[in-house]
Image (cartoon, rainbow, N blue to C red; front, side):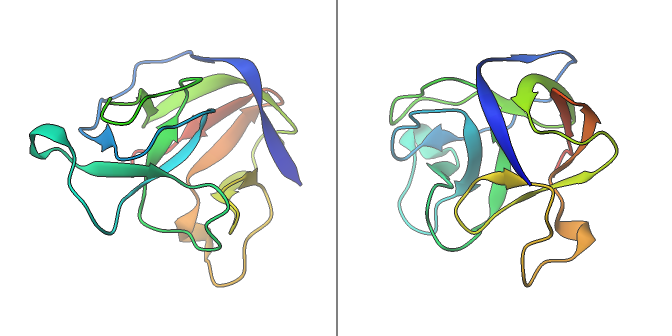
Length: 130
């Protein structure tokens, strides 16, 4: 089952910031990964959106910003609850699909240990600190 991000996601608990800057722009909330190539400004971790990549590169966190310009640091939910989703099943693990969407369905080639979060309420996800 696909999980959709609403237009106004908000953090409902504290989150530990992780360093990193977008190598390319993030146009909507979503999972971000460490870029395989390139460098970010100031030597920080170069990040890319996980959108339609066909693979799940090195997941770094869930960016709950609506948009982040290339070179800017996204606000990442790590070890935190984010409110504003639809299609969340409380108590079910959350994964990143091959296309970058959030899902409760275990993608092929992954194990439960690859989950990025767990449903808390029908509208909220707790994102693990990966």
